[in-house]
Length: 64
Image (tube, rainbow, N blue to C red; front, top):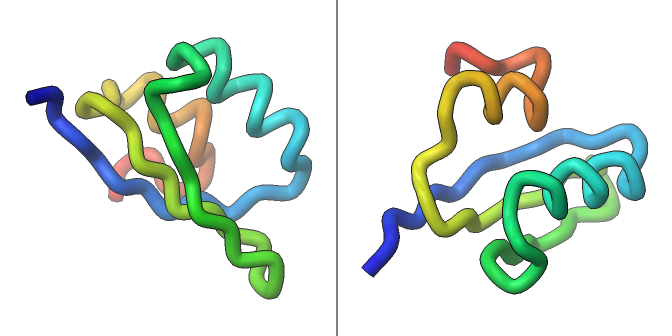
């Protein structure tokens, strides 16, 4: 069973975020729940992300 990691992401441009996610994972390997109110996504990804990948997804919170 793959490692699953949940990540809270605040986004500005959803299309840009989606394109980035598609480049990191094949489309069927991640899912997300969206909160329109505060523009955040809770991503569920199939493996632990590297610091570099986290940096791309969450530039402001790479070291959290």
